[in-house]
Length: 168
Image (cartoon, rainbow, N blue to C red; front, side, top):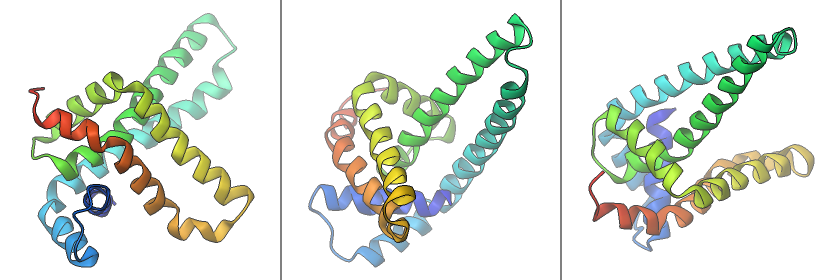
């Protein structure tokens, strides 16, 4: 999942910069090139997401039993927001930059917080597509992820170019 998402981001970034040539060739080249790191990032994100989901389920049933569980629920919400920020940016960064996995996580949270309006807009794109798929047209799921990633690549294009010239 991680390698294919990174390859999708790479193709969408090329399309956003009007540099695309052969989309299939570009996808599989990026898939092969970034397979190891992207797969590890994908597995880490799946593990963190599963842990947050289990914790959220537990907190949902315990949150109003005492003040301690209510405060712990607030911490869980903050962790979930940080997870979403990282999820929105990490594969875009992996497709654009060469860096270590730890630095990818650090940079994704820093860039996501620094450009919070863009991050909120990116999240809105995915939520809007999810609502469109659920309520209007279920077959749109076929094109939904690619369309959302393309719009997010258009939003992130100038930010990534700006980040090329800065040290993080």
